[in-house]
Image (cartoon, rainbow, N blue to C red; front, side, top):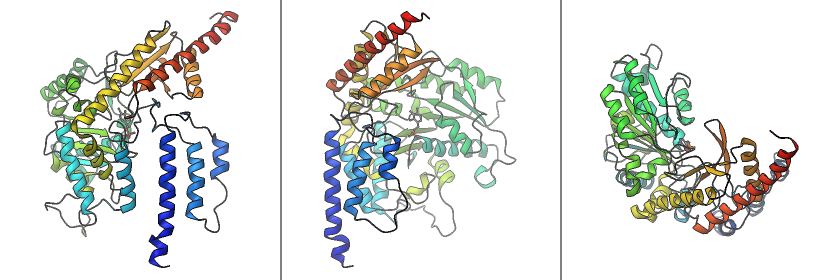
Length: 482
Ligand SMILES: *Cc1c(COP(=O)(O)O)cnc(C)c1O
């Protein structure tokens, strides 16, 4: 193979073709039905089959993959996807993500990939400033908030046990003092999952009562802490941004309670809620969280960076690093000036996911991040207002952030029916959830490209589906009264 064959026209052709396909897809996002058009059988038929014996040209593989992939893709990158908390991809972040794949660098050590190390270093500094967290904290770029919890709680585990004379990273949990973990009743499922992976067990967590919006109650936390042994190694997991209501634990009061009760480690799940720190008006909602010991968040949600990308921050950088840094003998100690990305996460070899984060932050600036988050919250409030104007439609939560919980006719079945109709309608996409034992439709606005027009089109579609479902349900109801 000549150089030209390897890196010349063959490569250029498939990359140009791919960029055209990608641009066509992105252009189609505002108009295409949000739900995927292809079902399981069709996707298996298109993408399945036996392991090919021989090769296929790159152009053909990419063309066919694009067709099948788009047919089976939820248009979650588009402006009218309101399911879960997903976020889209800013053009600048997507472009940087392409470069990241093109460079194909291994973000382990500075020596292997200096640019990735410096992009992380710069972005880390910007993030600590944006969120107003301790400027000398440890920062790691993870795959998502799940792994951010694992890293943060590994640091927590190390710290609380080391204070009782136990080095868990060397000797493990066998023979270690018992660690007490408390979390709000509305804790996200990724926290117990992290505890499970860390050998602390997913079921040993003590749940602290939450209020009607899902916020951990400081009085209940104080009581739970007072009931335990004062000297027990303890970790408290709080949350800003409840995945249903968007509610944030009252962090100042929680920090007061934790600091008064002893020396527990305070961890904060801020998967999307941490981004409220970028918006001055939302300050009161999330003030006090800077007093915690560790924070977990996501870039792929509210920063609108392509999947996958998460953030972990640990106040005591030495503890963070000691819990994570690979210590194999052939690795050089790095009390050097350079940042080694692998010192702050659980992975060894990994993608240089600091580049898209750096690009998004540089592209938006502090004001741009604030505008995006603020704008999404305003659209959530707009949809909540539009929906609740309709008789029989109720918004169940205080819309403090970007999440709205909607209930139709105080009826689980009707609510589920509306959701199914909305998903089939294709104008927008939302999912159902359960809030305080009642079925709800959950609206999450977290995409940079969503406009007022998108919000209004979606509100209209939801109400259209509601009326159709209600009238259908009314017919059934008349035949068989409940
Ligand atoms: C999404 C979410 C998580 C998990 O984040 P991943 O990036 O999916 O790992 C954790 N906590 C909360 C509150 C979330 O919304």
